[in-house]
Length: 131
Image (cartoon, rainbow, N blue to C red; front, top):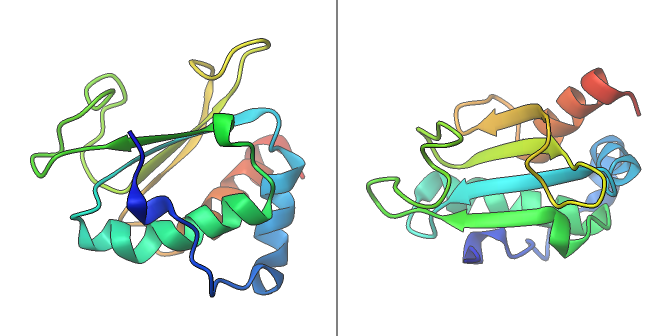
């Protein structure tokens, strides 16, 4: 199920976030992004359109992005398995060869981080994997 809030923000300026886009792009064929959110959620409506734009600017393939809609009780697919409490949550995993996920978790963004998801995740990915 897809999230309308992941539709890329058309006014987001990739040039202003070049470092984040470059890092996401450098790993766009080896990572999977699992995004839990809700179109009803204020934080998701605030944060996810820019994240969607960053993934688009980094040419992350659609098959590397899994969008999971949760209900207002924050219930939905994978919530228990991934221990999702707050939304939006983005789990970044290394994709095993020949598969689309279920790999090693590299990092996760949870709604209370002080930076926007693209910037925060790019820094964490760079620290874990290098640029």
